[in-house]
Image 1 (cartoon, helix red, strand yellow):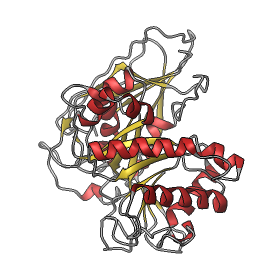
Image 2 (cartoon, helix red, strand yellow):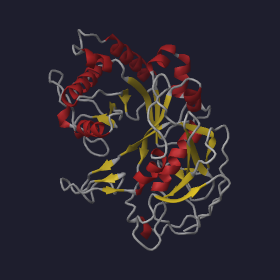
Image 3 (cartoon, one colour):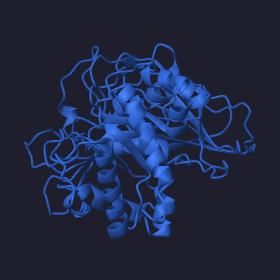
Image 4 (tube, helix red, strand yellow):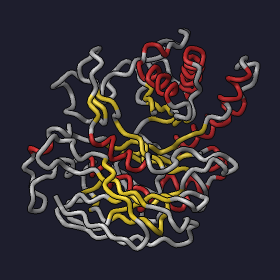
Length: 410
């Protein structure tokens, strides 16, 4: 869960309350619901990671050290009140990567974290957790440049300070394949650190008249759709080895008619009523996460997290020209394979956001599958004649080796 640190002013999807409005004031994270949401989410999934970055700083923040103090005191206040420690920090400003200045500040930030002691953070457990915080850089929007990678290559101190490189709203690598290099050669995490959720309520999509190229929308496909989200995850990994996607926003709680129209995975648009709508985008993501062991691998590589397999993944969805990252309506192969490190299990996710039938043959190699192993086929597709969600997340068949299945285009 990613939180933006604000100064009581607009943060594109609402104002983010300043946790510390004056230099002498004690930080107070209770002003901002994001910290509470993270605490609630961690009760459900203790393995959830929390990251923060700056949107806008309070007026009293004049120096780099002021900004560090703001971060530190807010983080420790959340630890005191909610019992969790932030896992990742981007010391710099959202979508405003500034090159040399941000490099220098990132290095200073890393040194300040390393220099903390029981004299500055008395709680020894809090201190140990604080010193484990990892740093994120870049968070650029609609830009894929070699700038960060080149600076990492040229500056060993910067390389050692940085754990993650994140980009927003684009799936592509740069002209030198720097993100693949960072992930595969340098072992840095590469994130799609802000990506679109669906731009629609899927219950409304069956009424679309958008023809692309010749057939009207299917109910869950097209621009800003749930299937586009699936293609974005696949294309992000295939093109630039991004292993993590963060959606903006996951939950929408705007009053009807305000700001955005259903730009979220979960809608809670009647405040305090408790009613929620789970959009199809959540189920498209479930096709990835429910059939693989996902999460963060530990330092000894023994957590059993499944690996994305580049040689068994492909993306043909057209690169978009807007912040909607991909367009799959033209057809082509779009799939991603995840496999257990023990080689005894795997999952292949196939997305067809087109009007064309696609035929896939799965051939297993270099695996250790039992001879009688079955392959379950799960599907989410648009409605036939019933409710809009009648065909969401259905197990439609079990397959044995050398068997075939035909799924007609609906």
